[in-house]
Image (tube, rainbow, N blue to C red; front, side):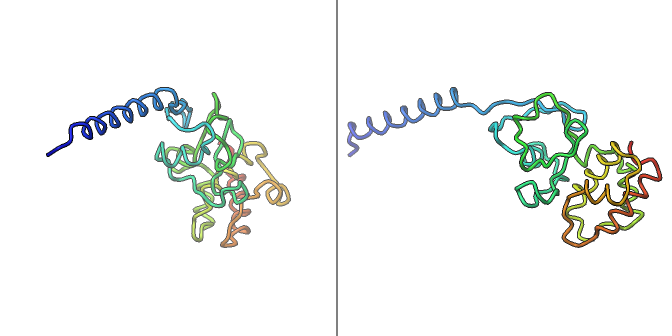
Length: 183
């Protein structure tokens, strides 16, 4: 036979749990951010300190931007923020504000940006993992400096390519520059 006092305590505990859940969610909701990503307004609800990389990949399903090191050293996560290259793995979503974010998916609609075309023509990619970040860094460089020297490329493009395609990367940047790669 069921003990009605025990049942009453169980129901009371359930009700308290539901009330606690309601109040926790009501008062501790995730902040909502409206971001300009690839010329589209997108809304997300995430912790303020969530790296933009994870918002792009996990919330917005823009998976071209890669996770490499998580400490802003390798450059696989490079995106453009207001036209400048930024390592998104260490850039909190709360810092985006009204800025404009461009990912590899937004660099050109059809993959026909001069840097992307030069990458293909020079057969730059080996494993390909770092290439989105490399391309974004190169496109930002050419926008600021349409005809960089080898030294300027080496100084500015600090992304790491573990496959060692740096010579082809430099040649591709020069090729894109010769074709007006700052678009």
